[in-house]
Image (cartoon, rainbow, N blue to C red; front, side):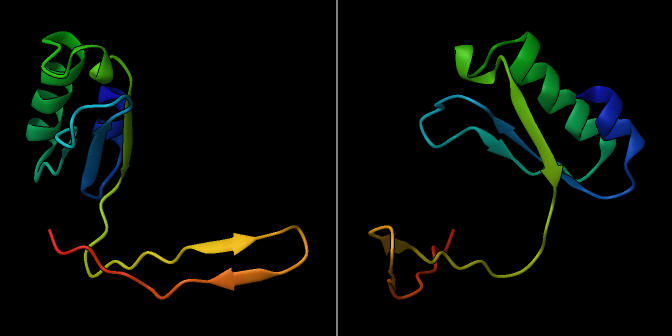
Length: 86
């Protein structure tokens, strides 16, 4: 994870792979902050087993919307979009 963070030029999002009571996502602004957060999660175990494995993704800026759909195998019905303001 550290090698990946050091190899990319964009900001990252780090997510604890397991259940972390809604607290397992961090948005570091620098490579140093990202490395410190990886240490907290994976070495210091601040999220217990939830942080033993992490997902590191490109950080995207802007608004987000969720759209759910239900399918019976032949047709799809979409629910209205929803936005979570955090």
